[in-house]
Length: 230
Ligand SMILES: Nc1ncnc2c1ncn2[C@@H]1O[C@H](COP(=O)(O)OP(=O)(O)OP(=O)(O)O)[C@@H](O)[C@H]1O
Ligand SMILES: Nc1nc2c(ncn2[C@@H]2O[C@H](COP(=O)(O)OP(=O)(O)O)[C@@H](O)[C@H]2O)c(=O)[nH]1
Image (cartoon, rainbow, N blue to C red; front, side, top):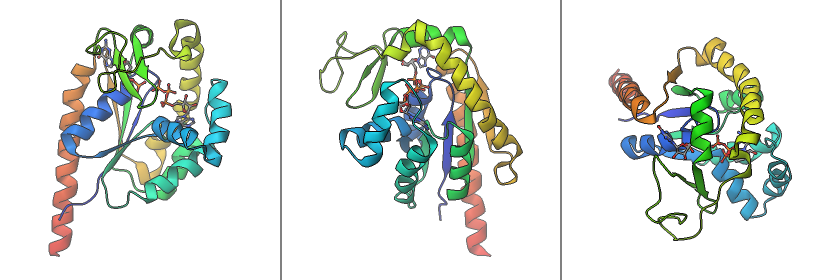
């Protein structure tokens, strides 16, 4: 019998959440749920939450917690049969508390990447907005310069990935993320789930995350087997 596995991945813009989430989803068969993708889908579908979210994103702001939880928690309820990895949520303490009430997490991955590395990476980040696919002109360039690999459509650079916007964005990230990290350290239900990875290269962090998840997933599954035989 296999028990479901639930994880979140946190880190500043450019820390590699999307890149690492793809690797986790591919290696461990978890569903990769991206809060940014949910927001973009809701904007495209013009749902009530999507229309509201758009007004904040346009101003370069985070979507307010009540809109974000209204958009995301029902999607998690549809996922009760699946193991998943949530990327981009929670971003604030209120979101962490809402998620904590809605489900039990097994692991919270926290990426701690130096500021200079983030600046360097985001300067070279290009995205395909309709799909959320992300490229980096040095690390994972597209097959054809400036074009999405799957659709051939043009890639763009986000305004807020530019160096001028970045410092303020990273400062803001630190302010809102600190209480989330503390929450995972202190809250009884979440004790022991937080793992922080610090490095400048995704390829050096990845083996450690992979080992952690292999160990956690096999422990959870053998606990479930023991429980089912007792
Ligand atoms: N958990 C969240 N809380 C509030 N707003 C969110 C959340 N997740 C996404 N958003 C909104 O959607 C936008 C797009 O999110 P997404 O995670 O794709 O990109 P991002 O902010 O550029 O992050 P990153 O650079 O870390 O990948 C965000 O800028 C923010 O306005
Ligand atoms: N040079 C370099 N770029 C990386 C590395 N890991 C990820 N990237 C790129 O850095 C950018 C940010 O990564 P992304 O996964 O989008 O981070 P997120 O904002 O946390 O989701 C993307 O363009 C990635 O392709 C790395 O180890 N080295």
